[in-house]
Image (cartoon, rainbow, N blue to C red; front, side):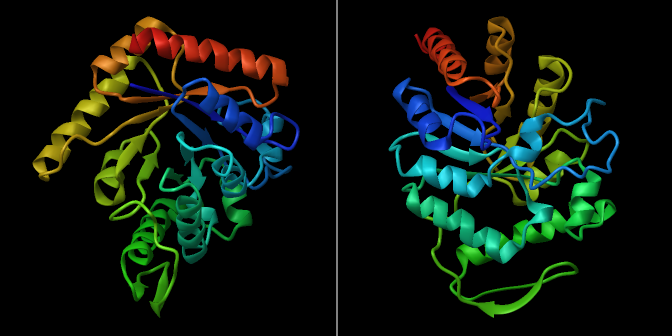
Length: 282
């Protein structure tokens, strides 16, 4: 089992280099950071819970910049986006950013991707929310083509470019892992088409999630693939639930850390998380 942290990294809270060092010093395995470019003032209510957006949403740092800062002060932990909003990013630039981060980290980066939930945020980027899943599909297929081809080209409905050179290529082969986020009814289709892993949230009960994990494994086997790794973003701290999820095949748990916590509280949370990890590993 792997234990890590999922968080918003903002201009107000614990900064990414300090946070990443603290995660690694405690023997934890990973740091995943979220992304929002902005929160539209006009959208009411913009948060899926029905509340106004947390301050963290609109103060979050760019995830690739934050993780680059984390990469240069750590040696071991996995660094990931949890998740990057692909429908708000140019695919050629995204391929370069992700490969650059994999290069700087020595092959420790994992690209968690998703389409997002804030429709007005998407519209401000020129994205039609109704087509976001089809757009994400083409952008990720194009990114993979850039990573794996010396002269990459892609021709689709939303992404269209002729042969290009683009370096660096990812350190990891054949390319760095793509973790497809989401819990919707078609997420397994996306994982199997262009993903290397699944990064769900815990929606419903652990048993609900494990039923999807079992379906993912079954469908992957039908395609001749081995078990697809699952990284749970926002894992529960309840030991019984964790044990249930681990027995059901989830290998990597990223626990949500409050970005607005003081440094003292943030470090205490990491201490508690390290003790929990040690208990399960022991």
